[in-house]
Length: 535
Image 1 (cartoon, rainbow, N blue to C red):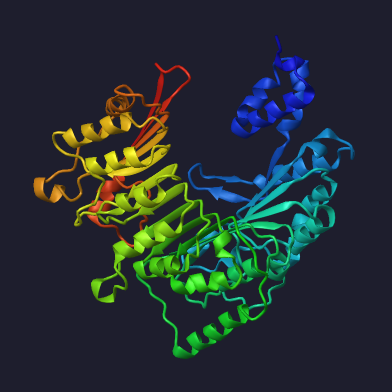
Image 2: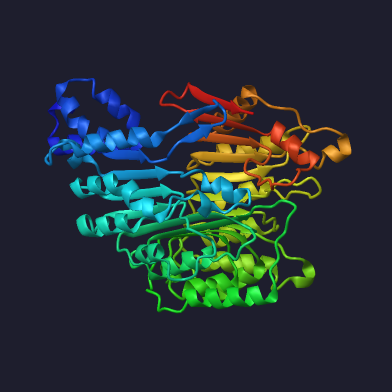
């Protein structure tokens, strides 16, 4: 009989790698088993290293000053004092660099200039020099994540290209020195032409008093990057009562400067993942200038209207997608383009290889029919969610729709949908019974309404629920048929509703107070459940 300590070393390392990727805390437990496992496991303790360079910040909750960068500096220095053949330097595969320098993001959200919170360029080289020395001594580094709200220093990019040219660089929270910086910024040019860049993510607030070129600069970097694989961009208005406007002359200057960002010849590429907050015909045309959209495998976009879906479907632009997520934006009737049902149907049918589909705020009566016809043979994960509003009737799947999903998509493993609660609960019971007979189903997420609209008629919202309700729903799905359900998540109210900076409406305050999340998970022992109630 084989034990972990008697396995072939390569087999043991493979097992430990799987444990590290799925449950890193278990690695520390394996250290204590015996000397053989301690020796084999120790390198995995250092496999992922996180360094926080955030300077002194005031913790408003505890009313105390914290300085993560001091502890990080000592840690980096201890690494630099190691011998060149140290197993620690040979063990590090992933390096995560974090820094929220004086909270520039919060300054931006408040309407300030984030560049006032960034370190001066003269400080940059001194600040990052110890890290660059450490990178030069790492032996087998594979991935570096730069999660700092400041520009990626050119000295770091040069060090990667010199010592680790095949390392993958992932930039989170990409930041410019100033939103109005014109084309030609040296730090952006260095990042755009870096062969290491694989992921570029930006989250910005818009609506400030200055001309904003951040979106154009981001696309400039993406268009020049030779090896970019993942591009994520999201923007949100900072809101408030002040709205900034610009003169005609300023808008003309902005248009000319944006055109300069598109002047050079881009490098065509095929991304793995593209995430954007809004998709229109104009943005698609911008993407087509440097992206092979027919080779894209994952597309996640915010607002999309019928005209854009029709435009993409006619040209079959996204024919190779495996994952598609979008939020449907219904235009006013007098501005509407092609028939929205036809546009949605054509778009879905043009994505013939989808295995994951998520649609938000599209309540078309035939959506389930379109999905079953075009994607029934490939779909593994489906999410259809409409956000609850106090004055609108929320479209939800009927019992017949759930039955269609059961018969037409036999390999469906994950399902997310809405239920408008009824007083007698009969509709809910019928839906649970159908779900219990879906053999492939492993994960279910249900969005229940709070009764925001019915409250106008009956004067109150639905009562809060607790663990007993979660266990009842689980039992209704898993004990009546051949169900193999592993995870159930129930939302009462909208979990991710965006709230502006103005004073929220009364119903919104009530929703924030009363919304809940209930989670039920099965363990290896089918008789034991883990139930968690939040809110």
